[in-house]
Image 1 (tube, one colour):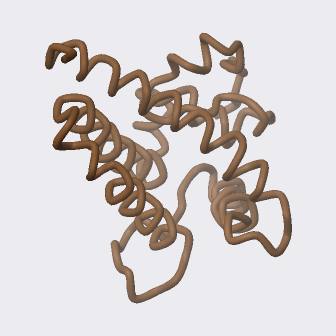
Image 2 (cartoon, rainbow, N blue to C red):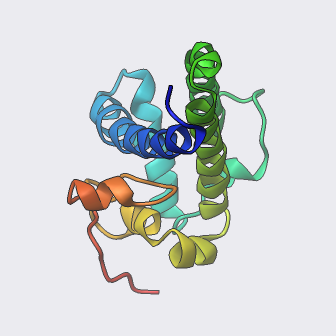
Length: 160
């Protein structure tokens, strides 16, 4: 059995890899298809962020009453939690790291789209994903490890 520390570390790596893969291949890949469930990411979230210089007003109020980008994101995150739940009993530290990563992802992503100055300073890679002129790079939100490993971390100069 893997030690708890090793499980937790591997869970963090797994979560970051999953974030990168999901953002690149599902949110942007499948999301580029007009009638896809995932098209909300490009057609709503990215479009709003460009118009409002990173701010997505939908994050101001957390609600599942409105079927919008934020409620869809919460449903997807909840689905990821549920899908991983059976593994909790086998690899508790690994799944705990995944759950911590999901919570951190949502907190950071929401804060980034409510406080652009904070995002530019603390999540520069995500800020550049939206406003750096290249939405085909900088796939990670919480931390850019897999962007660096897979050479998709692209730095840009953004005018303020």
